[in-house]
Image (cartoon, rainbow, N blue to C red; front, side):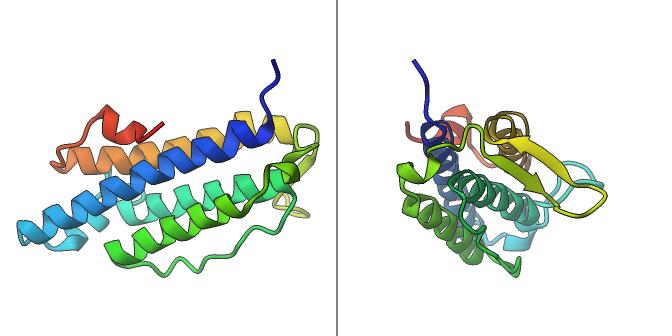
Length: 169
């Protein structure tokens, strides 16, 4: 049985973005209830040389929309990375989920072998087949940033676990 590129990407991205949204909303409520400055969470890191929670969420969304757009052969939506609050981060996640929802499965026909070029025309240019882009680059990058966002919150006292990370499936 062959799994379509749509099935291997969009539902997976939607699931983890949904759980990320739930975890962020819970953290926002937790901070408000305990009168903790939201920036204590938004700027939290696992280690000084790592990006903070806010940037981890932005990058996870960037990979999610990039994966969907590139495999569907549509323009990658541009986001301005101006989020500074939980409400703004939640809106970014919602906007990313809406974009992914707008991608019809038919757009992914031929995506397995479609050439994906990253950073075209630069010394860092990378070329992938759609399959290799998804399996070896896009999904691992997305999971890294989604997992790191979860780990930052868990490390900072949020009562969340694997079931929260996995979300609804």
